[in-house]
Amino acid sequence: MTLTLPTLAFLTAPAGERLLADLAHEDLSDANTLRLLTRLRRDHSGERAGAALELARLRRDAAPKFGADAARMFFTRDALEQASDPLIRRWRTGNLTPARSVRSPSPFTERGLGGEVASGNFHPLLDICCGIGSDSLAYSAAGRDVTGIDLDPLRIEMARLNAAALGLHARFEVVDAAVYQPLPDTQHIFFDPGRRSADGRRIYDVEAYHPPLSLIRRFRAHEITVKLSPGVDLAQLQPYCADGWEVTFVSVDGDLKEADLTYDVLLAGVDSLPPAAVLLVGDDIHTLDVTGRRSQTPGSAPAVRLFDDYALPPLADPCAWLCEPDPAAIRAGLVQQVAHLCGGSLLDETIAYFSTDTKPDTPWARAWRIEAWMPFNVKRLREYLRVRGVGRVTVKKRGTAVTPDVLIPQLKLKGDGERLIVLTRLRGQQIALVCEA
Image (cartoon, rainbow, N blue to C red):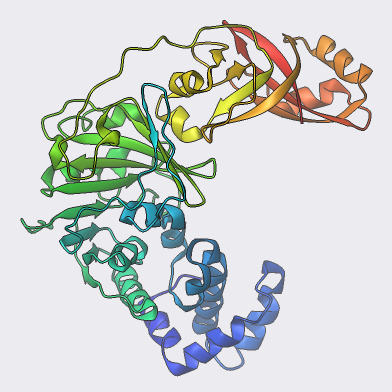
């Protein structure tokens, strides 16, 4: 059921509010749809009943992103899916203060950046393609003077309702971003273009976004943040990554969430900043890059300098632990930096695994103890597992065409043991690693 302005008006009227309050205590599973709609249609039209059920389910599904506030908010399905992770909203707006800040002895930066908000907190912020207002309201809660614009009248009305529900102040206007000209005194622009087609399919071409990424060439502000898909093609961003622009990949608890393309007027004139990675774990914020910029005090002149005074990790056979960098570091091209941080050696120059003699103590990699490794051969691997009574395996893979669905039946597993099987490459040759599960 698609929500519309008329059904939204009903749901915000007393009768609609009572209906939503009633549904908040119901079993909203798909199996219960027919029973619920049959009961609701005794007193309401099919359109209103369907809209109420849809919003009730959206509020249930929004709880991981919005907590208890979700029960008072308004969503569309695609707007909810595009809404930022709550930890990222807090980090981006400066409302996430790290419990600890870690400095690495390595010649690149790994440190906390929470709470580093310039003193101009009340300067105007323009949220372009604001949707239901989730990021606008996060900035408002951080004390920013926010205006959100979007082409969709339904989303703008929901954004206004959400602001009222949360007791926050922000202005929302129905505006076509493609023809809108930001005011010259705008301090910060946040831009979250639509990345799904009308039929719900993901859009991978940045110039096919709604509106296209090239719109940012018209923006004029001290700071610009563009939220992108974490799978964005870096080659498509290359024309933008100069003169103060930088790409940052962001993960939360090891789950890659988004990519941010950011502009800082202090970096104007600096060409081709390499990508960076941010990892959020609870209240801890870790940042990894290969420049000196992120070690600067907020507001000071940045020292942009590539570190070149360390040797790249060597290529070597697997040793005691197999390590996989955080996905944000992988997408930022910082695998070698993480391996260097951990004192590890690479298996292959093109593969995002490395190995270490001891288990690494860093949030930037997870590790499994290696029990054995061998050139990949199904018969040999099957015999190794048979002798040890292994009846369950989890298969991970990088750099191989072999799929778990094909391999696992061929192993003819039997027994109570459990292992992790990693299929990858060592100096270009296919290998299998058997790790403790």
